[in-house]
Length: 358
Image (cartoon, rainbow, N blue to C red; front, side, top):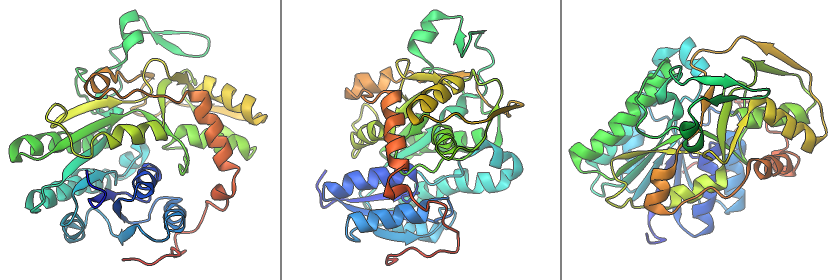
């Protein structure tokens, strides 16, 4: 793709959007960010991007539920990464309608804008492992620090895209609905669309809360010597992917080939990059030399005891492989969180971004 091509990133001031935007801006691409700045850290991320790249990123403050704003943003885009979303299962249980408006209807707004655009830009959409539900059918054994599948072949490969969809929460329903819309709009209207069903991602510019971004959340709490609550017994296992590796995977899809179009891919660290909650705490405490006060609470709705991505399908088609280990990812996070770039991250919603809104 030419460096004169226009990249649109919805949710562009969020964690993943900021990292992807920085990658494109470093390479001289024209980048537009659409974000409503509602997420903690979004304003700071936007200011960082505008400062690092001398205001070269075009910014539109809008919500994906605003169909007109989305159409205007999409109109001159050549490639779109759709990250704007309501991101927490817990929030979806409190406000299912709001969750649906953002995740399902917001995605439809993006798809309809693409369908009416003269450029028919390619779309990459970030879905979630939650579309596979609780995965209670997987028989697990409880080890000292983690759960492991009794099926050794599954343990060695992870969950593939052949796993049946089973949404299990309002969040799963809204993201799963959008996931399927993206695939089938591509088929029905001959659009270039790809879905990433993502596992746990971590890296710089991630704020991390108790409801979402658990790796960053635990690192933040430990560095601040604050107490930590674990929901469930802490043996829950995930594969973890560093955001720089994810950005490399995205950059392979600037203009999707026929082999990947209209497909969903499971993306994560894979079987070589797995860790439980308890194991992560041990790694962080060792590296940060802090020991938090830990308490336990009941497991939360829709929480999978074991989820590991089988990314082999995407790897076979593109050659992509994760490169950064979990320990390296934690080191990068600790370094970033203790740097000047991570100071004063708890800005208030009333604070205005220190850059022009175009």
